[in-house]
Amino acid sequence: MNRADKPKKTANELVDMLKNEKGITFDIMTEAEAVNYFRDINNYLRTASYRKNYEKHQSGKNVGKYIDLDFAYLTELSSIDMHLRKSAFQMCIDIEHAIKTKLIAAIENNPYEDGYNIVDLFLLKHPDVLENIEGKADSIFTGGLIEKYFSLCYVYYNHGMTTTVKTKIDKCDCPVWVLVEIIAFGDLLKLISLYNDEYPCYKVIVPSQSILKAIKSLRNACAHNNCLLNNMNRGETKPPPEITQFVSKIQTIGKEERNKKLSCRPMFELVCMLKAYDEVVSSNVRNHGFEKLRTFVDEKMFGNINYFSTNIVVKTSFEFFKKVLDNFK
Image 1 (cartoon, rainbow, N blue to C red):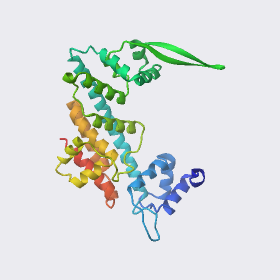
Image 2: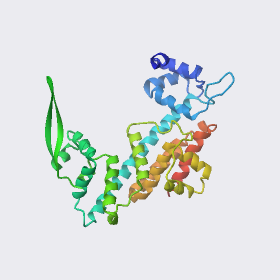
Image 3: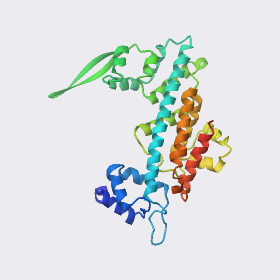
Image 4: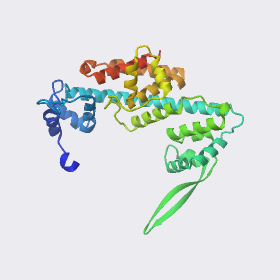
């Protein structure tokens, strides 16, 4: 039972546990500094999650304790992860904006589509999207657009002594260039897929759905502030052939390294992001985005790389990411 096995602990108790039970050292950061870290900077759950990148002693007096893991290594990984999430989120937003622009441009050049018909087809096929839009009708950011391009009605539900009101869409008169500003990234991908199926001769040229879905996953992880680098070990991800082929052309990356690193889901999603960013984002934004990311890699990701000199998983994962990034000049 978690209530019994994992009771609430103070910052001091957590530090004692890491030291005595987990074998984590405090040579770079003192125990007192670690206590203050838990109180003022980050919580235990997130900080300790990066220990998954380290191995444990399998035998001897230290069995079950981590090998060569100092508390400062965990805080460094946490800091690197935070900065990476910020950069990745902005790049995902840039990709989302770029594919919206490409979709609208394709429709503008399509003489068989007026920009309204595709919306009718889309909402007919995906009625759940209409429900999502209804849920945004009261939003200060999208409510005005929804009220202008959709006819709204209000349904009252009586529950004994209380009454609830739900906004419902009675009629849609919305063009696609407005719809893309209202729907979520995942729904945008569905819209692009439907449009390309309906108009194969006027397709919008964007990365494949498998790559865009990986970017959507990464975007959501960054938006929800999920840790990306708390487990960089070999995983179960099977990348699509186009990603495997793309990385295979990078001469500094061998087959074993490629297979191992792309099996790690976060690393795979980051590679998809870099590839799509290069393909769809406008040149000025692209150059700025890559330059900013290179600065992060050089100054932050590799700033204390000596911390991970004995950790092959972390060291090689950072090197792999840099090799892929260096491919884009």
